[in-house]
Length: 312
Image (cartoon, rainbow, N blue to C red):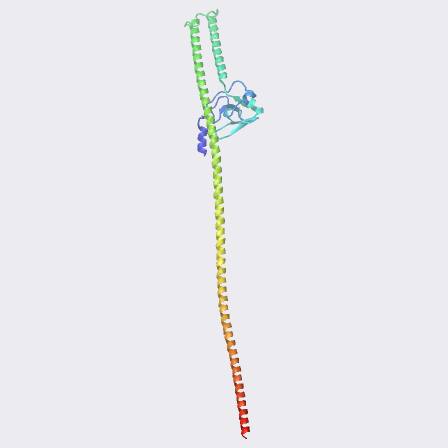
């Protein structure tokens, strides 16, 4: 992100040379302008807007051409370099630490002063040349070359004055052109500042989205790890359950075997008991048969005895 931001900051802006008399330029500036000759008022300073330009006094005593970054009720923050560093000047130091950029009215006043200066030089030259021509102390042998006449000097001065006016007009035209360029550069700087702000906001949104994505991934990893731990626990529980199931199956098999053996023993005991009962019954039957046979033998013996007794 730093490269596109740097390109936005450099777009439409220029590095300019240092001014004389301790005036320096910040790295993020439009083409250099001169300070206004008149000290500004609090009202003029309070009318500055964001992306406007002014000169601010630095800690080393020099003046820096800077851009307004932020405006508060009692302070103004200016840029001092292209790394985003700024300097905040409170209201009680505005008059001593802020100078406005030279305006078009100041340029016109400078042109008028220059015109008046040239006119004064012209009048002084005329009076000086006239006094030289009619001075009683002037010696005709002072120079072998004849001095120019007043008309020639007047023509030369008029030509110089005309050239000076043309130069001033050209300078004024050039300054107007520079002012237009500066205005266009200011608009470009505002647009770049807006694009930079949008880029920074987009970067913040992208960082928030990246952070949210990171949090989602982190939560997904935590949830995945939690599920893995649950699966491991479930696998352990299943293993314990299978182990218990095997033990229970073994116990059931042992119980079934014991039951079968008990049933077999019970059947054998019942069979033995039935056999014992059968033997007892057989013995009783044999005894009953023996008793019946004995009774029959006794009855026959009595019958025989009776018969014998009757015969006798």
